[in-house]
Image 1 (cartoon, rainbow, N blue to C red):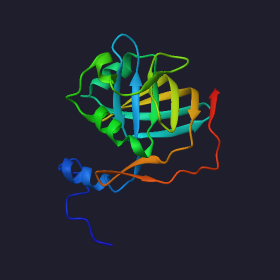
Image 2 (tube, one colour):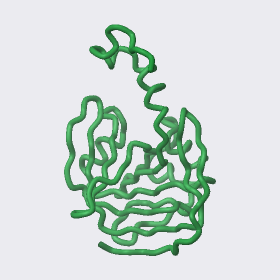
Image 3 (cartoon, helix red, strand yellow):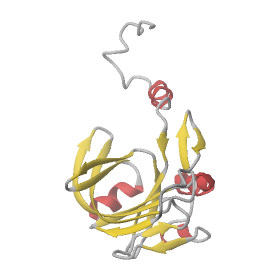
Image 4 (cartoon, rainbow, N blue to C red):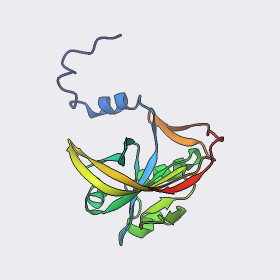
Length: 184
């Protein structure tokens, strides 16, 4: 195993590009996190994970400078769409900072309103979650937003979109499971 260069362990934030390259070695799923209301908004996020089964909690990490940060901080809840392998264009759209804002940012992207809230959910996603904002925590240049899962819908007919080493990829779907919708 190579030795780390002298000084890198004491100054990990000195080179953001180095950190991005290192963190890219961890494959993640790709989600679009959404909030509803009069100014709906969506954001591609791969910093998403499950946290707890009881209560059912998930988290998403959002940069403090991102528009989504303020929207999530004031929203009562949010939606999460876990993207299918064929949805890399959707991921790129919601990652593009120059896209239109508000309702216009969802034009041309097939969406459905969440059944129990007004957060848009991306059609064709392999999983939808509706979450109530549970807590938020300071985490350096990001905040960690915890959401309590209120409802979910799993569609297993597609492969999942993955992000690894700065590129989109996918794994094949497990077609033995049946889709389901549950309110928790």
